Image 1: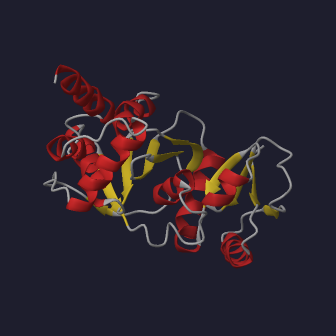
Image 2: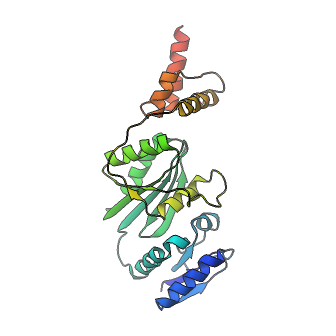
Image 3: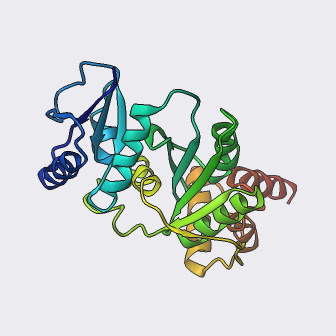
Length: 253
């Protein structure tokens, strides 16, 4: 039989969870974050970062101070569920190497860091095609504005429900560049719905960054032109395509 457990090193969060679970007359146990779960049917509460850094069996529910009530509702749903998954929430930490996390019916299911923005939509489509979900929501952090807006536009064109999440609180206390944990925190926090596609206007800094990346990717051999960098920024050409094109034109000169 499924049971509830609190498994976190965050003492303030643990105290609040204990308080709220007792108010609902729900039975639970408290387990040290460094100890594994003994029973696979255990539904356990933990912070997004702890779920990733201290994995174990059972069903983990990502929770933070701001979303305790929602997390408890998800846990109750897991206790009572008998059929297929109903809800899929995907969190995306936008950037050149997007972090992706996904939550099924309120329970953590997986994380992945992609090697390019171009991989993102095909990967999300695979996740969404896993089952006939009643509800699919894509939550995108508000960092890296140009890449963020590209992702938002691509998701809206797929007719997915899109929310933009304030990343300020999702990045607190994180190891630098840990995109997977950021993505899980984004997935666990509701945001503002985005209804319309956005105009894309790459800044000079973003264009120069892309040109620098082309030089790194080609081991110093190629620096793509500004006009080509704009196409990469807008998602109309991949970095590999830009470098190959530049090599082709260079060889003809």
